[in-house]
Length: 152
Image 1: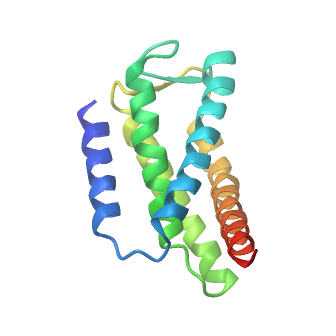
Image 2: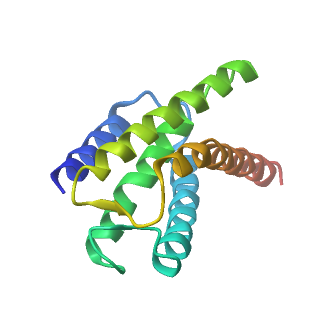
Image 3: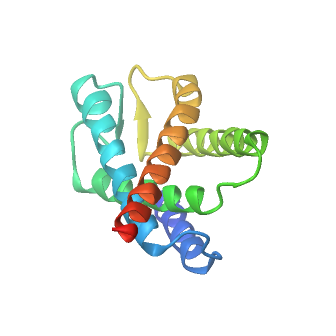
């Protein structure tokens, strides 16, 4: 559990002190999308199909807090530093983040905070690029909607 708490604190500190390339409003709205997406995935994959879980079977306050602290904060950091440059740099950024998240997932598997019961680490590794692209796509839609609302 301490590994998760320390991770969350580090992510929150990064958000506070990182140079902001995106607005707080954008971080807020895209982080809500990330949180809802993660909770939906957890309901389906963890609760319904019991492929993995947090701490123990079922839903508890600790797993909710873990999700609330880790996923929105990482989303905000990921989007804040997403390169505006070439598609190659963006692809490398997504691959790099996939490696980081997969390594973090492996590390958290070594604690009592997360376990598999049918899921495999490589499922996550191949899912993360699509998930990160979805988060970036939501970011683009959010920016487009904001721009459209400002014009009206």
